[in-house]
Length: 252
Image (cartoon, rainbow, N blue to C red; front, side, top):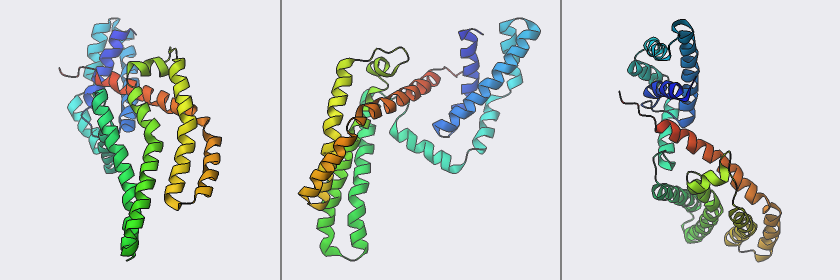
């Protein structure tokens, strides 16, 4: 089967799957199942008629109406999976520019930090300890900012993965930039221990205990570059997959 035929089969599948409101994982599962089915039907038709164009037409006819299939798949999607798809759109979409992606990830990062900030003061307020609200707010703020700093490398990975640099670093035939690798490794040796130190110090005010956490963080610092590239390679694969399917023209 040549690439042109495979692209047309994918287009038939995408006409059904793209309008469905579901998580990326669920859509990927549906795509793989439908594409495997279509491939089997096409090969069977090709063996019968011996002509790719005719085999493709007969395959599409046997496949059925895409709108009806979309409706059937949509009915089978659980509500929680639809909610998950909404959350995924807030984090990133295949057509996002780097600037839009940066904005989305910054908002998500701030939202996570805000959740950490709000949790402690709210708990104190519910307990009726209004006098401790300011202290709790300060602790929550420091902890939230510390965790936000800890998540910054993952924000960088999100921004790098879909770009040309991402293809160089995470692609199957990539030649990793030693300068970038060295910078990530050096940053991880500083960022992980520093986050452990400042978060513990901000929450407890115990400088001696914070030094112990600094030493503890140093033990995990070498894992930073490996975490970066493990997450980055997976994100690169996911971005590439979603953008490939999103690029298909599904309009008749």
